[in-house]
Image (tube, rainbow, N blue to C red; front, side):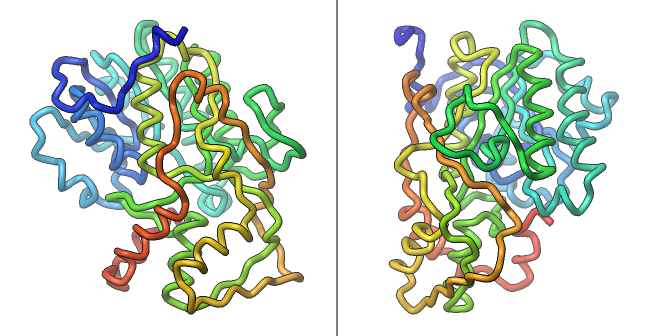
Length: 327
């Protein structure tokens, strides 16, 4: 099997690899992934509603092999023409995170499940489909989660993404169950745990920590993007299955993450709230052996990510902050 695995780390300048569709390509992971695909020699069409604007793609917009289309995965008539002729679809478009899903449950299910079903119904049998799933599918689990652990989501976000994952796997696609993503991207998000706590540590010099014993898994946005490129180039080996994407070294409790942030912002005070509760009840530890055995590993630590976040946070204007969340 190892001889079938392709190293995707140094493909800059390779030409003629085919045309890939990236749904949600103007989002947090998408704006990191699209330049990687272009550098690897792919032609790319971004298909997005642009709820957060076009600005995150401006830095790459002049690339001759990039095409940008405004559209909605929930509208098959908009989706069908952009899927035509593509060798693969990287499906990132979704309502992401439990707050955004709880805010509009119908929209969450319509987008995350039915929008995904639209893609599987329109795709050809020879097209590759790679889906952005999530570790949130596991919910709260004792012991170490593997891809064989029964999923038991405890939020609408987790259940809607699990529903989309089932649709993809039934169609023979690949589902990447991403750990909680962090780090800097052209379309910045500050509502993710590491990014959010780092922002509060710097701005407020303090933050409350609820249920700090809850376990989370973490993945830098650049490593998340690399995983999609890896799956695209190793599709024959990976198709039809789900893969956890992350690193056991970043299986942390929330308290451990807080300590990493405090080490970089020594003036920050962490208030351990023993009476408050975390609305996000996920609590699990994950094994990443399956994808690691194929040759994929994370490269950027939480500590490195926090350092990078602290470089840019002081430069963000107050009016820009409203576009740094998914709700």
